[in-house]
Length: 128
Image (cartoon, rainbow, N blue to C red; front, side, top):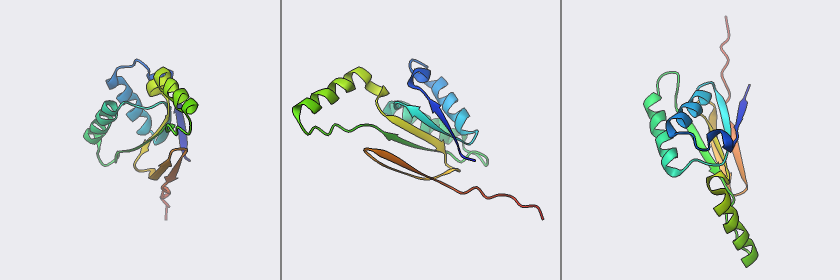
């Protein structure tokens, strides 16, 4: 069974980086895929990857991360101004982040409007 766990932005806002990483990796190690409101800063994402690499072993193969956020498709001045104002007000909260265990996620494809997540089939162990 594939399990998605939603993390609202309010759960990670203002939380020290070490605690964010601990929370994220704890959930992913339970073979759950995180759907997080907002996005990590580039420096936080880098630290998450570093922390993940330090924890790789026979049971934990790593993570896959993908971020989607609205692009400023400024067709006109009004839309450009609106998107700029939203960016100032929401900052890192704007967007969506998907994080999951590398053992479950085969591939993540994204474009500005959607994320397609392809999961690996779990091989069941049969008793003979």
